[in-house]
Length: 330
Image (cartoon, rainbow, N blue to C red; front, side):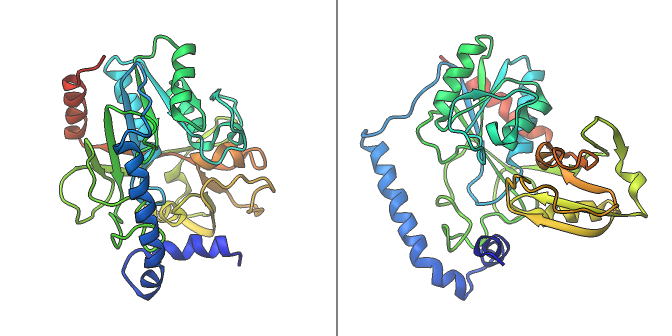
């Protein structure tokens, strides 16, 4: 097994407690902490300045390594803003893409050009989405192309201090902050607690405060040709499943929870590009995530993409709207 694949499987387990491996990694976490402190001083002393865009910016992100529901929450936030009358746009770094230019995400863009998550966000919301290594540059390009946009949602970026923001939304799943240590001894990208405007929990954990959200699979799966099939119709027949996520086992567990019989599961690294084709070649139906679909369908168009729906409690939306109303936007 390759080292990267081994780390992908083992580190999440190591980060759940302060076991002996975590203690061995602690010196590297202390180095990480020192680098974060030094970086913070660049901004605190005015040697670096955050770029402020001419419209309000909401950042949706997390403080732990691995998926916690950030992209489904970004989609939900954009849809809510649209329902409230905002003209929302989305900016992202486009993690996993092979290009480093500034570009718009189109419905038929390749994930290798724009990233799988920005493509999914555009397809699910219809909002204009732009990607760039520097998110502020993506924002400026988006606003120039879409002058009607009056608010931007940044997919990921809690740790991207180069972009000024008007609201931080942090999402956490059932892992919480794990063992509470910084990478690589723990899952934290930065020390916690930290100041955020809104905290959303997608699973049970012991962190105080915040709002709750329900995360569940959509009732219908669809293939590359737009054909849909009810998940409930698959109960009782063996199917295969593949996921290129930070936590693929979470997707498999959700499939089993709705009564599906998984014959074979293939767990792949986050943002896996399927460049060598599908890892599954049986005659059984193959289920995947919507994030994987655009890449997997190039090789296996009959694969069924299962949507992941995140539904925050009503109080979360009330708090979001209240903070937007209170902000002295330019």
